[in-house]
Image (cartoon, rainbow, N blue to C red; front, top):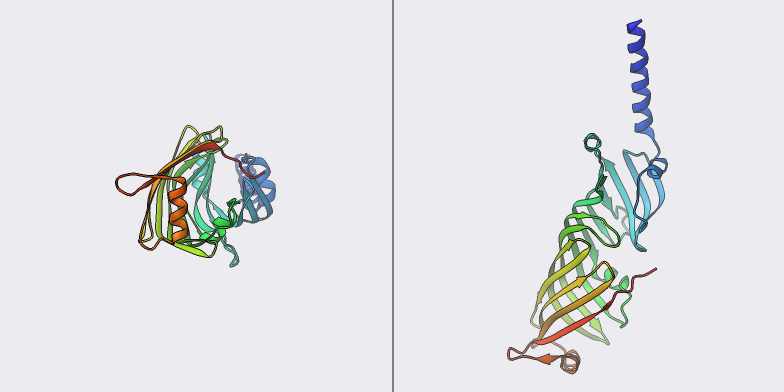
Length: 256
């Protein structure tokens, strides 16, 4: 009798494991809590190894997504996976990292994203016809989601071979870098930029109420086109070191 019970238990265990291994990803995602800002379509594969043809975050297109679930995380009460964005050759945004869901909510670790500056500028809906060249790289060391932005997080963003163009005039910025941080829903950014055309330092704070504050300074260099130099002198005041200060605050309008 005992052998029969063990045999039935063994069969049941094999059945449960088989179901989990072959569980379709689109079915499994129905039982996993997702932020309302996240939209997934074209889900395929299994819960362990799946693919999303299109992923959007706050209406920003992230392209395709592939994941591999990390089984050991389940024993810690978490669902954790290694993810890769932009596997398709036409994708502008590419990246990889760790994404998970635990008792504290959605979190991200060691995430690296790269994108052409042109792609970033096109998705910023700028009020002026500005084009950009170079490449952006965003590295998120750790991030924990909490509406509307985050609960905590740290990271860095860099823009290499940076250049902006407007009205047939170009400004080589060379390299732009900034540190990102989030604490209790308050996002902060602080960075600098240095080139022969322009030097700058800047900081930004964004609150959970969508209120922002931007401040910093710019210092024109020898290679800065005359049009930009005149524009800076019109809208900013200079100090003894030849730096023009700027400050702005208001309410951030996000795309619907």
